[in-house]
Image (cartoon, rainbow, N blue to C red; front, side, top):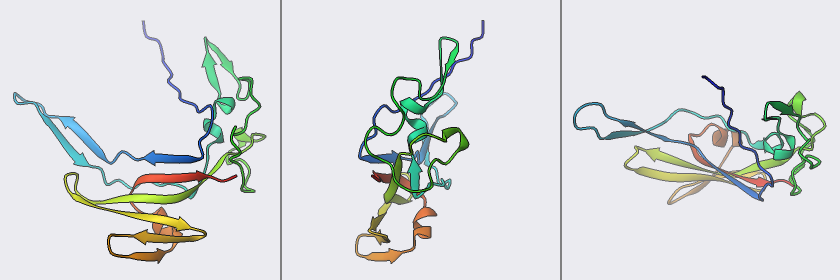
Length: 163
């Protein structure tokens, strides 16, 4: 008989830094007598925020199903929030479902970009210092606008807790 399954990941305690790697490659098994694999780079643009609220992903704030009954967010025994002092920003929570939950804000501080093909290319980075963003390449460091950073083809996103 068919049974629907749900897989869910939540975070118990937030770290001071958060590194997100975006999947920028795909591999497909070749059909035919020789088999093998074919890999290629994925250049699809992925939108990412300058500020990321991790509160919706905290174990204490997640709605989940336990043995057929739904457990409401915040009923896991802890009082919600981030468990590490990651708060800040006056925007409060970014969804009505999270109202009343302490936000856990992370601020983007660096982005790594790969230019080129899967088997060759070059890495550059964007790094924030204070309120300014800089593009770092092998031979130069140039100040850029945040909009340039947020529109790049990111490979790695690095966030820091904003207490």
